[in-house]
Image (cartoon, rainbow, N blue to C red; front, side, top):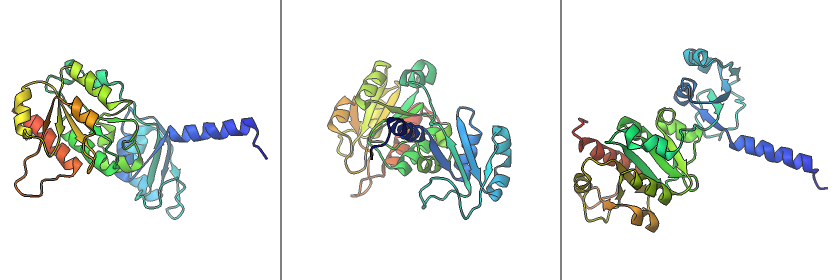
Length: 265
């Protein structure tokens, strides 16, 4: 028997609403989200022990938590998720557009952005967000499709950086690269086969804002992304094994971009 149209529409609306929210979990991620005034919070579920540990953040947020039995935690999380008795349903963060976040007149002449070409592992993206926050990047930028979305796993890996470091999911990476170049950014693609070293590439761009472009592990940069870069650079290796995890490569690139301006590590 065919469902009535109103039932179909209601189910579709319910699915759309669910897709528009994210469940953050873990004491650290939930605490940082509760303390973030930019975060639109909807539902907080905690065990009694977690409520005690999060008491100041809960009070500051103004939320009334649901106290849950730790043996029957009523939240739609993956069974393998280590939630530590705390989960928060919230809206994804809205950081604004690329121009507003990365404009050198606002971000500073020494602005650095990180662009990710189909990096889908939330643990890698979370680690990159942490490094971006440490080194003062204006944004981490990734395509809306074929990249790690804002999820509880990513938030937990970012260890709080997701609440403070802009993570922009844009429609088209090549278009975003062109927009950054129009703002004056020099885009450096990290490629293990490049002729120039990262240090040489950084020296060549001088004081211009920099966009570090990294590809997925294994696949690397796609042809269109590579061709859209101003230059390609490799991270020198002391041994025969010269491959870094993408999050480690991002951290090295961010450090190189920072010290070119004489900022101490």
